[in-house]
View (tube, rainbow, N blue to C red):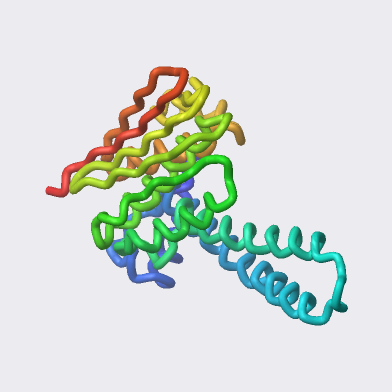
Length: 232
């Protein structure tokens, strides 16, 4: 049974005026709210760990081996960066129905890719802000392209007035067939698993917002995901 038929819209309506028109909550919106709550609850303890490690470093004796401390600090910061990115890509960062500064999305993505074998090229000339669903779709497209580069490479971002394009270049670049099917909505719901759920979510996000998706690539060194929509 679809989650939107559980009749929870009145609860959300009381807690957030974004649903004041009384429409039922669709699956994508419900998932976004849950992710936001989880990421919010995890961010505070993760930040506390990072602050505690900074204090502990100051108390270490002179000449102490800092290799273990460096690893712990890197892991703590990596956790915070992942939570920030996932909240923006899958959650409802900033609230529902809002516009998100493109600079915030870029910052989250750059931090997420920091230290990875895949580089991210995001031009400085971008729109000032975009509707939240488009920002979320863009970040999900980046994740899918990054996953299609098994040996590393480069991910490029292009943002137009009514279009997004994310490209990937590297040895063996290819979006797996099961990801392509999930993104296109061809995967039966009872066959969606942990390996394809992110592609399935991205496809659902596009379809619920009437955004058209396009997949291209040569299967060996290049892959491209495109998204187009109409503002009118």
